[in-house]
Image (cartoon, rainbow, N blue to C red; front, side, top):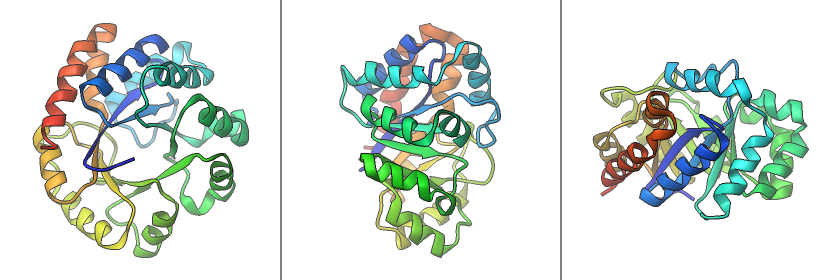
Length: 248
């Protein structure tokens, strides 16, 4: 799924389910290799102000079922991989088995559950494995080697958080990210995608030159949608193309 790849994040149903599908298709056409689709959540402890704002707006008319409808709509026109990102609460409330099976049937390829560590995810991993759903786990710069090795065995790819803190655009990639990337790549066989703070073509170039198999960009896209709503399509296309140029 990940090989010198651009992973682009959108908030599901923001501003509408139909527009989310259009944003996903536009970005995929412009060069995004993987789409990460985030489920709006009321207590998004891993997300910064930009994505939090999108969640608050989206939750006014949101139903979890819309996520599956969005994936189905995207899948009718595009085969590029979709990773559903969620906190565990919406999955638990729907029922883990029903959620994973419906997500897989709708066309999703993998799940990233931000607040579910791998060593507390035995049931979830078992269900995903049973239906063929992939898993993506988060690693931080200080994740111990034994946990990295365990995640490596379970992950479709490893999502390396570039720094301590929450999502959000930053002027520069933290030196910590390059040190962590080198360490994780020396331990893990799975592809490694770096996210949090990645928002510019030079960031993409620096990280892929340092060995990243992929980069994840979210807040820069969500900011455009916060600013322009449904009129953000061409801005999303242009940003995707600029970021894609950073992959060389």
